Image (cartoon, rainbow, N blue to C red; front, side, top):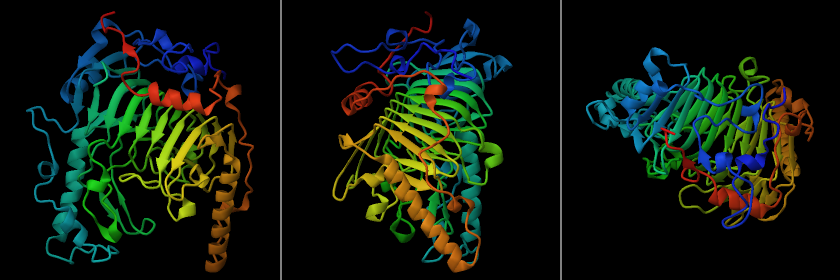
Length: 479
């Protein structure tokens, strides 16, 4: 079903060509109105994504802390009725009703991450309650602390909600914002600092061992028709390079995703936003085995965003029909906190990840990747995905061949999978029997209307000057 807003183009949801130059208009003439609907992308398909549009006065709120926000979301006992919530200042997910900011020792008195690590042994390979007399206690404290933290910091946005930041200083720290089985939700003009997981867990069998934090900044589970626009998502004040150093010299990763979409999430547009200084940035789909939940869903548009120093998952896609258009990707091999080291350099960083059954349609994205050894392979990595198509993208200002990069990555991983199966006498995975193709089986132009910038300068300019909060003026809540 084609988008009902067929006369709106991509240019309508993007800012003009640059400061002091004529260009396309912003929505509402540069003003955020509470009844705005997603103008393009998958969020404008098969219905309208306008959040709490039309909410009566009694269902419009201005909030400044977590308690006020949760009261507004309850909406007089009708949480799914249309509601518009304006956020002023910073909402702290760790703030209690009595004004305390909770930390690790408040959630789990006596917990010690260094003692927790010691219970895996010196190489971090195997946990045992008997390694030290405190190990059973550390295991229990980590779990109870994590659960207590979840109860405190999780903010669930129900259906028919619009959440708007007032001014350029509105947003969240220490909160885990979730779209849980929700429909028709709009989030705009907000800064979100990813929550620090005090109780991150070490998984020795995850690759060569990995830290796995629990809490995303924003995440969606089984939700549809979501529009996320002019937001800023980052680790902010708490980079993982400041976390304790654990096994194999790895810092404890205390952040999970910035914006993860899973379990059948569908019809999403992410526009004009900044995602930066983070590792596991955006994941679509939580496992290759979840075809029953994700097959035919995870339809997402990423348009006009700035993604800087994201290390990986910008996004990593499973199953979905995903449109990535006019985004500006920036990274460096020698960034002091978030270096991006490509596969060709022996690392695992990438911007676009083509996962199992994914169908990514990439257009006119600009990639600037610098530092010693920087090379084009960082643009795309294949993770069991054999269908990828790019048109018109650039690498360091020159025309790029992302299709060849994606194909080479797929064929390398395919050869590794076949060799491993042969060596172990096991059956090779189904995807390894496929060939790479640029036929992704769909074209966004046949689904919704848009018009893309077609020069790297315009893509960069938009990303650097017209993304994130504070770009658009928010209409007076009373107007």
